[in-house]
Image 1 (cartoon, one colour):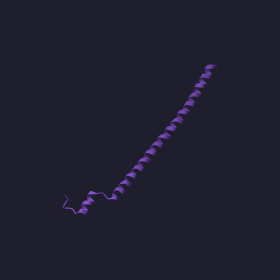
Image 2 (tube, one colour):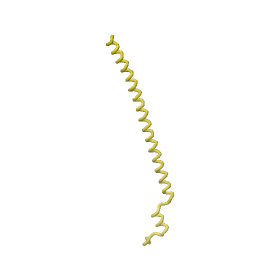
Image 3 (cartoon, one colour):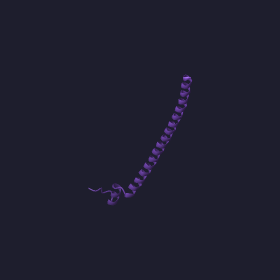
Image 4 (tube, helix red, strand yellow):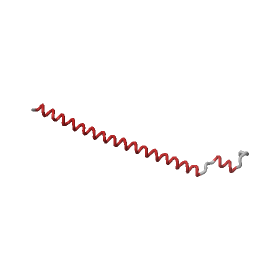
Length: 78
């Protein structure tokens, strides 16, 4: 039984979504997804750069420590 207080056109407008509403929602969701992907890429890139700097620092410290150990061993060998 149809709702008698609403005309059929109004009832159809209320119960069905228009294609433009769905298109607007899709564009909004895609926009949010694009921003989220950009943020994830920025975070991943930043972590990668910091990790590479950490590896370079550890390598430099390793070389410095190795030089000290070699000097110590040469002094002991004399």
